[in-house]
Amino acid sequence: MLVHPWDASRDTAESRDFLLAHGFGQLIAAGRGRDVPVVVPTQYALEDGTKVVVLHLARPNPVWAAIDENPVVLLAVAGDWAFVPSAWKAVGAEDPALGIPTTYYAAVQLTARAEVVDDEAGKAAILRLQQGLADPDGGWVDPAEHGRTLAGIRGLRLRVTDVRGKFKYGGNVDAEHRLEVAERLAGRAGPGDRAARGHLLRRLADEA
Image (cartoon, rainbow, N blue to C red):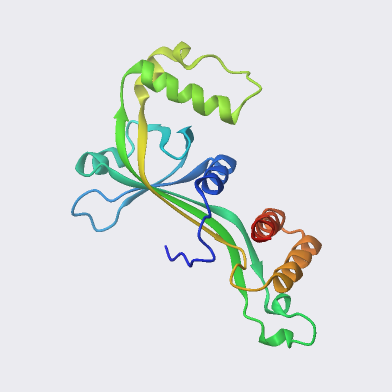
């Protein structure tokens, strides 16, 4: 993805926090000699910051063949998006019709080497971590209690080799214009607006 200097993640904590908040992305395995990669929507959990990611998938999933061909994969996570109309880009006497519309969003892409986890203890450990994050109040039995059903899944441990984060929230314009957009986002309060406004204001404060 294209990452301008003003959109780039400022540190690993920013990318990590975004990944933790979302927990769902697209696992992409290119394999070898394929016309298109295998793309799998999936939940995931961070096992060691942005260094190790774990997840599980059904045994019949076509991704396993692609990983056997080439263990280098990409986990792509995007969200917190909001459309910014032309008129919102104008401040003071500026002509609102001349504003350039855009979409604010965040995206983090992890390049990793995939390791398949097939032993029951390893798969159960991955499930415990995932369930603990998704359902911290409990109400579920230990995955080891599922016995034979564990045979129906395989685990993945992704050892991350590269992290690319993009936080496109108006970093290429001055504070006055960004604050105008923040006010408009608060007034519209549509899906994604609150999260986008939070990123905008957080990154603006970091510059102060």
